[in-house]
Length: 253
Image (cartoon, rainbow, N blue to C red):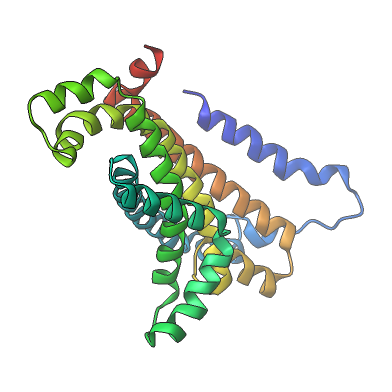
């Protein structure tokens, strides 16, 4: 596995890129681990990691559950369920995540007369937007299962939801695991949008440090590297899970 080496190479390229512009007075000292100021700033930047990871994990779990709940009625024979599925998917798939975040944080408290903090607002908004895509992933995965599996379940008298629970979904999960993993990676990147309403995630911490240090290029370069490392680690964990679940073999077949 060569991804740690790749990160080092990319990091070196980014850090040395300033050599091509002799007119710019580089200030890497603001993020250098060799100085007390740099150590303090790096700790401040990394302090947003917990919010980024926790928000992404909670939002992706909720979006998967909601997506599955939306997908199943859309595949049933009931016309009302199919109409609900299409309305939900088309509505939340069409709304940009940033717009949804702003509407949930500023609009929902006014409509419902409740208080919603930035963390909960981010989770709700990202989960709703992502659940529409999750519903389509589940729909495609379930429809990819051979028709004979459905007929076999029907022949032993299983009802629709029991058929999905015991026969179809266990097979479909192995096929849809790769796109589910991609959605998790996408969620990690989308979590940066929640910084606009004040969540102290990686992006927010970088923005605040830029205001105090006036070194946007150096600080945002560190931010790029933070997300790069985070995404690479998440991608490799997803691949390991795919191999454990046998998704690679399933795709090859």
